Image (cartoon, rainbow, N blue to C red; front, top):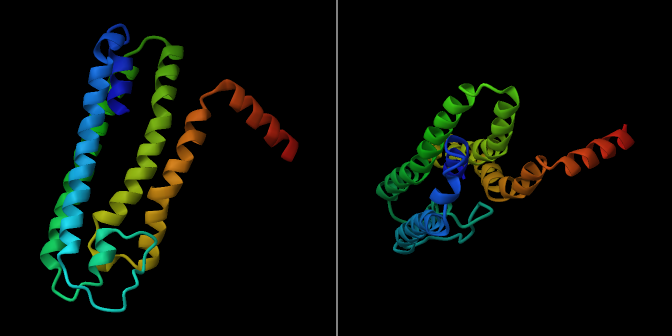
Length: 192
């Protein structure tokens, strides 16, 4: 999405030529492959361990760090591997997003028209809100040493990045629609 906005704002006339279906499929394929590789690596890490009772995971989801807490053996090396994998899986896309938005910001601040600057910024603001919400909670969960987080904090963060961020997606993106904004203002006026 950041690359899409980058292309639309930096090269609006070349955008339809650059962002054709094969390019979109290629970018989606890279994301799908990365997700599959990450899931496969985490699955292989967790299924090879013997587990001790009680067989209850103190978490909402069966994520690898929560499952590894049930292992009977020392899981230090696996936790280091999961941390390293998390750094790669999280920081690579985040770095790409930050780089794209840095370039977008450079173009926006060099625009002459205030209206054009406002339109370009509003186009990106919705995606930036979602990125900040998602990445802040997921980095909070995966890029801290396990001892620093309580089980309650882990659960809250996991629910936020797994459920709340995706549920807010359509709401935040629909706020760009004028009809929805007007309906929201009317509804807020009736409440007051």
